[in-house]
Length: 347
Image 1 (cartoon, rainbow, N blue to C red):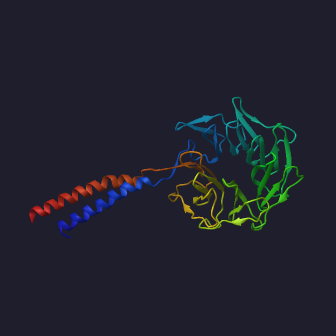
Image 2 (image 1 turned 180 degrees about the vertical axis):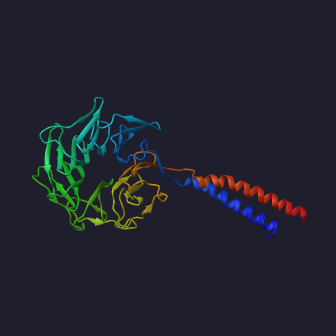
Image 3 (image 1 turned 45 degrees about the horizontal axis):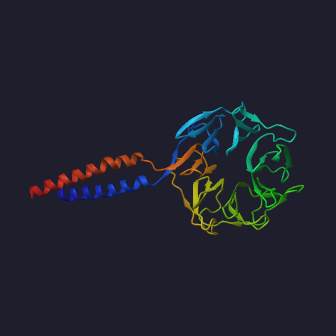
């Protein structure tokens, strides 16, 4: 290869590298931002407009103005499985029942019918709080008293719950069980009613979510399903998401986010709802980047946060490959220019 040809190759390579530099940093990806990475993140929520985390070692953290601050840890042997935030006390579903955190520290809910044992999920609507766990479902009313709603389906563990306000001011409770599908507890009812028409048999319900138009979504171990009204037939949501496990769901103004074993998938929302065959797209995550399946997605910030063994935020980053391009592209451009200049002088 002549010096002139080598010079042109170097200049062309430098131009391509510079174009790549201009584009590469604009592609956001999941970046770890966790004060206890390696301790396994079990729950996350927004509390008093700040991101709040709970880890398997009992530590609790809150992010304020870009810095992590440690809150008092959970009581000994109580480990959080779910956090529920808002403007009131921080609530934690734990391996030892439901706890509340305020200025006086962590306090357990007690009473004749208060939740006991491992709590898998919490849901709230107004002054009604619902707790679910291995021993069943409990409801706490505005008067502060707990009511044991029992087990929706025999010995099937309840993994997720959803509480929906009704026109008369009462609430409808949905339970998502392991291998027994969805059950409803209607206002004033004496027991649970199965709501599984359209769901595969022995379905594990892993997440619930409500879209702005009122459509209810159920994430299962066999894909994502939708329902417009209680007791309607469930319809499976198509597209590339397929029959993946859907562990968590969240939405912002324009998109629905679904967390699964292989990362996060997103689909556009049109007129506040989801199409039957959405255009699902995987969100960037380099191989081995996430520590675990995506258990939680939060969208109340400028960019989504996820819990996948650790806390991650979606943002642009400059990886080592980017810095190699930054250094290499100018060197190639200058080197190619010098070679071309020398070749022309000799000719």
